[in-house]
Image 1 (tube, rainbow, N blue to C red):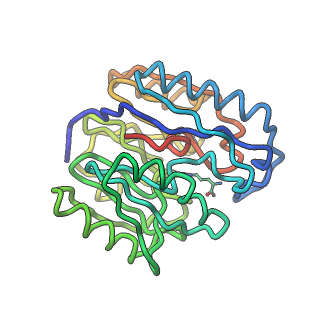
Image 2: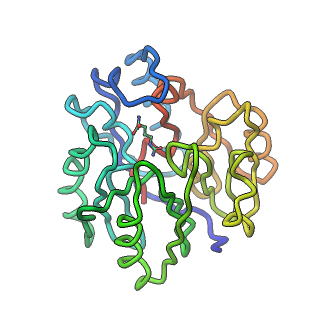
Length: 257
Ligand code: CIR
């Protein structure tokens, strides 16, 4: 297990478009797009406060979930991985970022029958844990492993159960510490980590974004916030109600490296 902090320096973000009202959601609710855009602005402010150079792309009106930039691609071990989305309505999102990444990184693209979404990839530096979910299958995990293991990144996989993505249940905030939903916290793969345990009543707060000494988390979850502060992190709470409605949290809104 790595005890290094999450040293991210650059993030790509995309504010929600007008069609964000049609985003995928397990329990659809009415979304206030104007409020979502203001919350996205506060999220970008938090990234910048944490020292991350943050690029803001144009909203995309063809893909309602395109603000969730974590899922269609990722940068791991210096390689940009172009994912193959498991959600049919999101498949074209990878093409929206492929050109940007190809111009800057050596890239690898997942191919059929693989599916893999960034929300299933827990990046702990020298170790990556990948969730097997409705969005990410064993072929996707095998392709990722073949690219990362020669770069000395160990890829481990695990079923995730009832959560949408692995990162809905647990996020890594650096320094050997995970923020884990209490129903996932005893998972054997998390045995070696320090833990912030998120009580069921604060379940949404298990998705965070750790950047160096900072953690961006949803506002309104005091028990999780307090535990993070007690571990020495500078907590940046951001109102996220309109992203919660579409099952996305702070990590989901950035393609970060
Ligand atoms: C979806 O269902 O794909 C979006 N509504 C939410 C994606 C959240 N992304 C993430 O956890 N990385």
